[in-house]
Image (cartoon, helix red, strand yellow):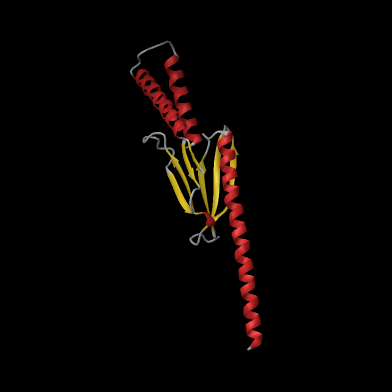
Amino acid sequence: MKLKSEQTKNKVAVVNIIVLIIFFTSLIFSYLDIAASKNNDEIALVASMLILIYLSYLGSPGFRYDSEGETLIFRNDKALPISFLTKDLQSDFPKRKLKKFNVKYKPLFKKKLEIYIYSKRASSGLSKLDFDISYLTKRQVRDLKTSLKKVLKENSRDQDIITESEYQEKNEQKKNGREE
């Protein structure tokens, strides 16, 4: 399954540009003491700053997910190159490494996808990856959860097959050891 939010990313980029223009013009008008309108310059400055902070809080608007093939691909993209408060994040790993996932709903409409994968580098054996999915619709989040549950189900089925075959090998080794 492929999932991407390119349209949302483009819309957020336009909103960011408009808000940045309002912020900088209000800042310049306030600094130069030019009254474009009565007392609205400071309000526009504060409002645009709050909007920029909120958009940064929500995180990266660009999200891509691909589960076709043998690997899972997750990617968060910034809306603009100047979005210094959010970060680009990309991770791809084999489906068999997926241990579990969790979608966290935080205050003010923020959503995060937490992915736990098996890792030899981590001391606990698990590594945690966080992706911003605040801009995904409810339907997209539901489809993402369904796809990840399907991968987990396949992993548990494959794990059961492996443990069963290991069990049979151990029994055969025990029988061969007794016969000698």
